[in-house]
Length: 273
Image 1 (cartoon, helix red, strand yellow):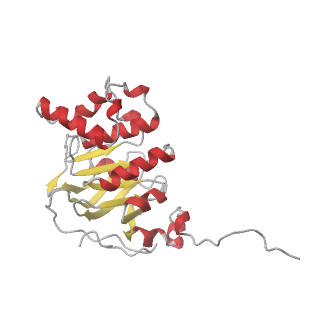
Image 2 (image 1 turned 120 degrees about the vertical axis):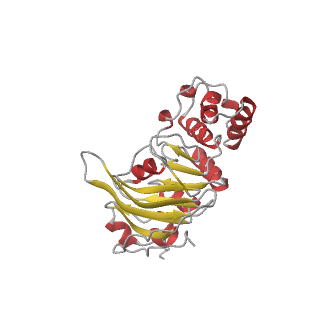
Image 3 (image 1 turned 180 degrees about the horizontal axis):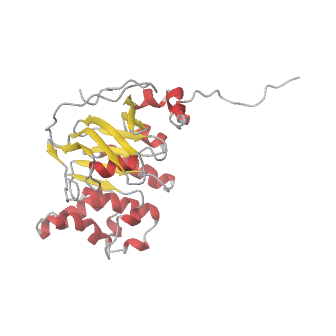
């Protein structure tokens, strides 16, 4: 099973093994992915893992570890120096529009640019060449899914941060993608909007790859986690097992989530006569 841990949660673990070809709808496969920016040494080195259809996988690591770069390579925004990204057994080509894979930016302001919310949500389906009636239905369904139907005619720049995040998520859902990539989807959200995003993602049928520094959020939605640092996968396994390994996390600049730390109940001081 490709979603079983392939690398034990240990700071000395070796990179994950290359998975075999995956052809099921919604399956994601990354083989030998490498990338370097012109002014930086190689950011990612021989990254390989597979995700079965409909599974949710978290990606964690310190700042600068390449998490966002991995997502941008996965959706074809960046071109790898080596390696292959495949969805449904078909290769993702850099620089093209491929509605099978959608990407949620860290900032929704980078994602919303049309005059109205409806226009933004319709942008993807229209570029897929779908008939007008199907586009209308997809827009309506996507906005209903995220609870933003009332925002349809609003200009995106008049929305709150939480509303923008929900609309940005609707722009992805309207394309009925196989794989959704999410970059810090709960950043700058209040508790109510954060909970709404969690509920949406827990019910999403798509394959999800999620990066976030909000480890408690990841514990709620992702059964599996990849820890990336130094350009490589340092751990790949059940999220509660990996994130409970204090030694591993400290070695890679992370802290153990509060919910996984044993706590003693602190009550009133004992009464002394």
